[in-house]
Image (cartoon, rainbow, N blue to C red; front, side, top):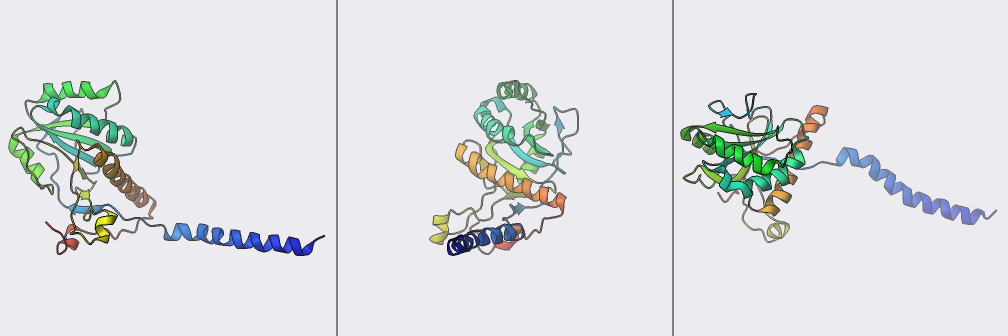
Length: 239
């Protein structure tokens, strides 16, 4: 028996497997992710709105993507279709997830037509249209952290993420790696443009996955949040 040869293989095996074993033990203890930032607090709920649902639609206790498609929502069918295919279809299986589209009263027929156009005979149980007066729509909209106003039709292509505690989620620092290297001024991501497919498909999808991970870890008692509030970066923000 060639003990020298065997010893060599044993040493090589130990050198190979020891670091791998160490990393496997280390991974559960050190694998952390950056929670999705709270960019605004105290978003208004839907108390003054009616809906097309048999149950009262609320933002509290849900993870919501909220949008405003105005008095003629059919004209926003591109935004709605992108939202449906790139977000709703991907996340509709997650507990407490919903999409809420805010419309002025009188847009009920147009909303039903839009729903027919985007449904493709698929389950839209977690997609809700809610209807309100103009003043209530504006109050809800401006309780979000927004840069631009609504159109005269009370519409925008942007959508927003609201968590179970009525906090608006997003990114306090949305700079790319190259922008970080160049020390560009900090800018935020508070809204997601439904016309920009890459933004919805990549940034928004990633952010929703992070938020669902946070709530899953909270249920398991594993979440240790160092989430920053919007005020934490006020001195650095360009807003």
